[in-house]
Amino acid sequence: MNFTASTAESLALQALGWLAAQDEAFGAFLAYSGTDAGEVRARAAEPELLGSVLDFLLSDEQQLLRFCAETGHAPEAPMRARQHLPGGDVPNWT
Image 1 (cartoon, rainbow, N blue to C red):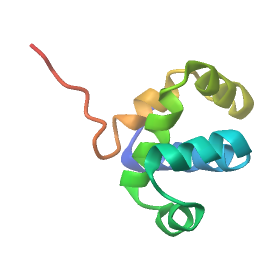
Image 2: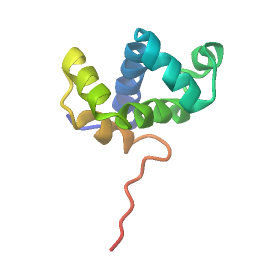
Image 3: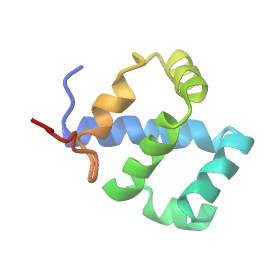
Image 4: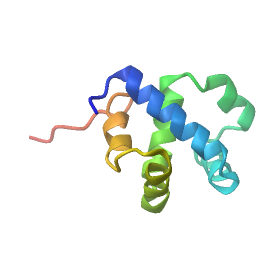
């Protein structure tokens, strides 16, 4: 899949919905992001929040693989999507 900002946001929204359906994982995301459920609902369309959703998902390989298996995404898709959201630039060290 070729990612754009729009397709990256769509994948991140899907990840947010998936997390919201997982009580323990969603609670961990709220703690990780320092937000509450109301703020997440209010900011769900903001690319910065969506980037943090993918950061959280990518921080736990088991969770990442479960999300991908349950949603039909390739395991590398969230990382590729993350690159198209604010703060997701891959540094060029050369």
